[in-house]
Image (cartoon, rainbow, N blue to C red; front, side, top):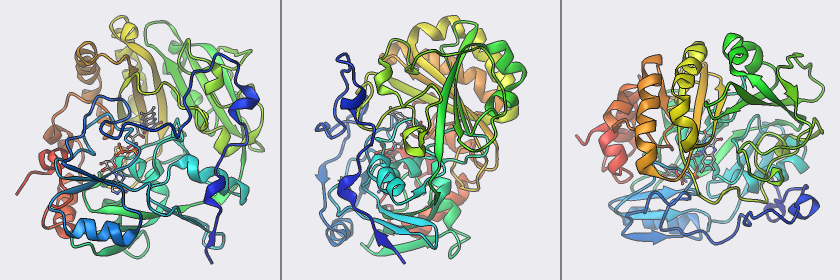
Length: 447
Ligand SMILES: Cc1cc2nc3c(=O)[nH]c(=O)nc-3n(C[C@H](O)[C@H](O)[C@H](O)COP(=O)(O)OP(=O)(O)OC[C@H]3O[C@@H](n4cnc5c(N)ncnc54)[C@H](O)[C@@H]3O)c2cc1C
């Protein structure tokens, strides 16, 4: 039986006022965003019309009367994946739904919600998601559509927790697809770049709530990380390595589930005070560290939900590689370190378990991901992205759908063995091309 949770109460228990020292300059997550552009401001949406429907029926009518329509989530993608010249729809005006089914171990959420809107209600009800991305301010539907991930040798990308979804098709029709009920199409329909229809509801796997504790090791030699990558990435439930590739060392953030054994790996030395993954940024933005136990949703993200870090002063690119390539990739990036470091806020290495979702960058491959948070200067960053790709593409890299890349869409498609199957799926669910945009046309061809 589904139990509606109180969606109005989704706030963190560790509030800004508890911890903020007067130096925090974060904005409240609800500060009015500029919807004409993405979060970073590097993409100005070309939409002829914007819509914010208040009901599913209104959304269905909009879709039925549109030739070209797309949804945008929280606009955190750096690529043009969400853009359109037709109609662009925000779903955050739809009635918020968070329905818990403790027996089936699922939560069904409306597609306009962000992780931050859901996880605290889930936690209060005694349940949890398996993983989260670095910040909880991103929408669930948009994260799922691009194969967004957190970290963990045993953790798959966030889309892999989707058990079912509902979408509005080109005629305004409602379609339900489930992992168990539609085994042929479902793996192609989850990481779908918005190209199959407008997702209105997602049903996610949940598990009993768990506690975590986070600690940071500093001055960990990159030599040691490359030499025994499995020991480092396997040292806790979720592990992130932060470096700017310019020096010999890295920070390693270890998020362990309390009550589970710790691997005992202890490279470098323990951080003695809380840190921010981005050097020079205030630690108050970060989730609690120093091995202090707390709920999963207040440890898995790096950044706290009640403060928005940075507000768009960055660009990002990221690559998923077969994890066996980790040492070679680390060596290659260290070779570029002198060029990369001055243009980086920070870079991060994480791991993602293989999944079966056709367009997931971790499809069929246990992966290591190399993420780059660049300064917001595209002219300066573009050649560096190309240099990184020259180094990582021969190692099997697949770029993140939501981030910047020098690859053309056809080159991107060539890195996904199920891209042609996905093209067939879009023609089945969207024969009129209602949900296509320039990005998917270039990716899939226009025949
Ligand atoms: C500060 C920051 C931190 C980040 N951290 C991480 C991280 O830790 N890990 C990671 O992997 N990525 C990360 N990203 C990238 C981010 O997770 C992805 O870009 C993700 O797509 C963002 O979700 P969104 O809702 O903003 O999507 P948008 O950019 O709004 O949209 C992305 C795609 O989803 C589609 N879409 C959105 N809603 C719907 C819907 N209802 N129905 C159909 N299609 C829909 C859009 O059409 C578009 O194709 C980060 C980005 C930023 C800016």
